[in-house]
Image (tube, rainbow, N blue to C red; front, side, top):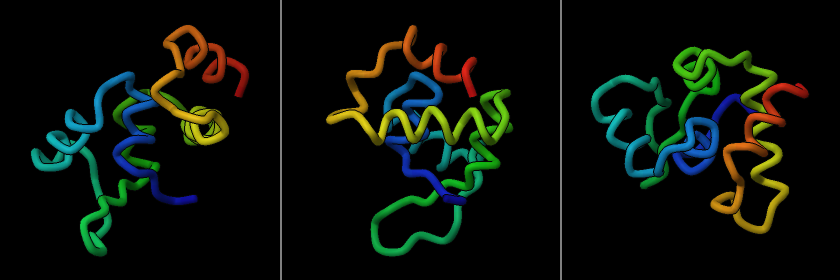
Length: 85
């Protein structure tokens, strides 16, 4: 999983997908060329900006994917996932 979506990156940062898209437009997050309308953000870029390791970012993204909706992930839960990985 070398890429994450704006929604998954939002789970990591505790931000909205719109904020992530703004960061992409500013060049703050590195992305692969778009295929259709979907952004593909390099996981290394998310890890670098968040100050987490790639394994911690993957853990947060995987935890968000396992839920019915990632919007329900609280900051407390997100922090626990980051510490456990």
